[in-house]
Length: 391
Ligand SMILES: [Fe+2]
Image (cartoon, protein in one colour):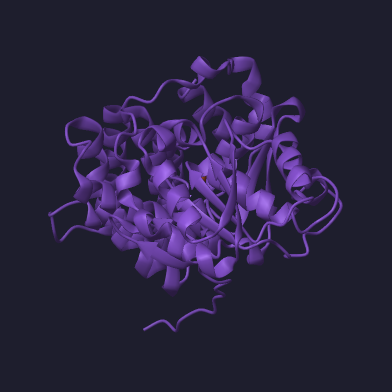
C-alpha cells in the first residue's frame, strides 16, 4: 500500500449548506459587525423578494447596510470604483450574493478595502505588489452551481482591453463563510445551469486527475462527481425545479472550489483562461466546450505514455459512471470519455465562433495557454487542434 503523500490545506470557509439557509443569512452576518456591504448581480434576487427579506432582517438586527449591484465579469475598473468609494466609510463585512462573477467581485473588493492602489497592482502576472492577505471579512452566497468561488482563495479579474483574465490570490482570501442554499439556483435558465454545471464538473475532474491531487481532495472530488453525474442532465432536460437535484449540483460546485484550491486544475482551465481573456465567452461555456476534446487527448497521451497512475485516476471516474464491473482501467477511461461526450452533446453549448473567435485567433490563444497540472502536457499544436474542433 502506498504511503499518503504530503499535502497542505490553506483553510476552508465556515460552510452553511442546505435549503433555506439563506433565510438565516442575517444571523451569519451579525457577528462580523454592524456595517455590511452587500454586492448583488442582476435583478432576480430583488424580484424574488429575497433581497427585501434580508434587508428587513438586517434592519431589525440594527445592522447598517449598503447595496451595490454589479453586471458581467469583474473588471479592475469596477473593483477599484467600489473599493475606493467604500474605503471612505466603515465596512465590517462584505457579502456577495450571485453567480461566480459576483462572488469574485465581492472577494476582490473585500481584499482591496484593506489595500491601497489598484487591484491591477496585485494581480498574478500583471502587478508588481504581493497581496498582504489583509481583508474585510467576506461572506459568499452563490446563486448558481458552478465556479465554486464560495470556497476558493482567488478572484478572477478580467480586462479584455488588455486581453487578460488574471487572479488576485492569497490563502487569506478564502471566504470567511459560504452560505450555499440550493433554492437560490432554482429558476436559472437551462444554458446557465448547463455551462456552470460543466465548469464544476471540469474542476472536479481536473483536480482529481491533477498531478497535485491528494488524499484529502480525492475523497471529496469523487463523491461530488457522482452527485453531479446524477443531477446535471436531468436539471437541464426536464427536472429544472427538482430541489433535491439542485442540492446535489450546489454541493458538487462547492466541493469543486475546495478541490481546485488544494489540488489545482488542468489543461481545460489552462486554455479557458486565455480564451476568456480574449473573447467574451462565459467561463462555463469555454470549459464545457473544451472538456471532451482536452480529456480525449490527455487520455490518449497517458495511454501512449503508459502512465498507469494517471490511467487509474481517469478509470476511477469511469467506474463511477457505469454499473459495468470487471473491466480494465483503459476500458473505464474510454467509458468516461463516452459519458463526457454524451453530456456535452446533450447540453448543446454554443460554438466559440458565436463569441467572435476565428481560426486566425487560435495561435494567439494557444501561445497564452498551458496545461497547468494535467497528467499529460499538451503541445501548442495539440491545443491548436482542440481549439479548431470547438470553433
Ligand atoms: Fe472553472
